[in-house]
Image (cartoon, rainbow, N blue to C red; front, side, top):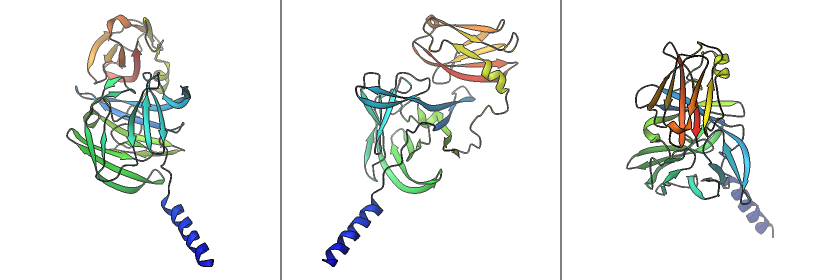
Length: 281
């Protein structure tokens, strides 16, 4: 009897040692800062942050600030993205091991763009455990014809949070990941904001409203003469419109753009003062 109890105890302890829940990725309060490099030179930083939990067809999803109608949920290492109707696509699978494959979905719901790796199959070539951001995390290397991705458990891809959009392997880089007061830097960056040191008051007073743009929205500045030029960029970082500022505001007309995601950049005497994303419906 004692031998049986001892065997059960060993089995129980073994199960406790080897069974470990996957570190969650989608937790409110977490912020990702991503650097998007423009193909025309230069670039800009945008933050990604969960702002609310929503119920779609009885399933709870996380919604990110300011993006298209895209929602996310996770189930023990599987991270899904869905549209407003609850149609899901697999975004990450942290249960994979060396030799396993992962096929990227055709569409990026987060950015409403065609996937960079549309339908491509990647193979897991390396799996390690590394101490990152205060925890031992699973690190996976995936390789495909178009490039290589590094996934970190509880953080996501080091190219960006959403590995599906914008030709990520070439243009996007994760700058930093912040959770519970711990900020971890990636890709050689040492600060989360590439625009650190600019006038934060000015940046806070430059507001585009309403956003999304359904008809005509107003990009308002703090005062007349505060800005002299506004660039409108598409999701690939290409300048598609340059506006000379006359006064303390600029009007953004939805009729001038196709529906989608854009960025505006505000300049004064060739100095970039603010970059912000907006959506045209």
